[in-house]
Image 1 (cartoon, rainbow, N blue to C red):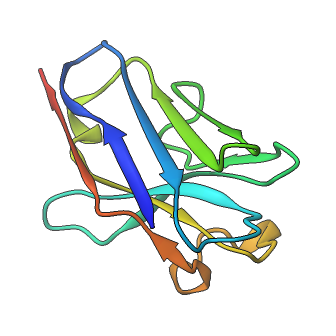
Image 2 (image 1 turned 90 degrees about the vertical axis):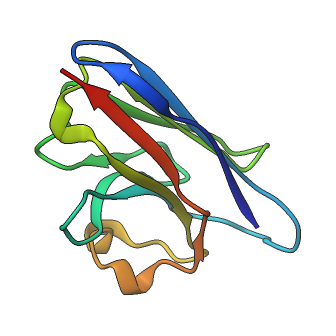
Length: 123
C-alpha cells in the first residue's frame, strides 16, 4: 500500500531523492515519514512530516536531508544532499492516520510501511 521509489547508489557529497506514494485502501493519512536500517543496526527515524508540513529530523541528517509531501497525492519525498557513507541503509517509508506530534520516533505507532529501498553511498 506504500510504494517507494528512488534510491540506488550515490557518491559521498552527492544527492539522491526518494519518493513514496500511498495507494489502495489507505484513507486519511496524517503523519508520513522515512526510517532506515543500516547493516547491523536497528531501524531508526530519519525524518517525518505532518499534514501541516511540520517536520522532524534525526540529528544525523539535519541540514542535509529535506522531507516534503503532497497531501493531494498522498506522496512523501526525501531529498538527501551531501550524502555520507554512513547514510548507507535500507530506507522505509511509513505513514499513519494518527497525529504523532513528538512521538514520531516510536516505531510501533506507525501503521503502514513500504517495502524498503536500498541506498548505498560510496566514498
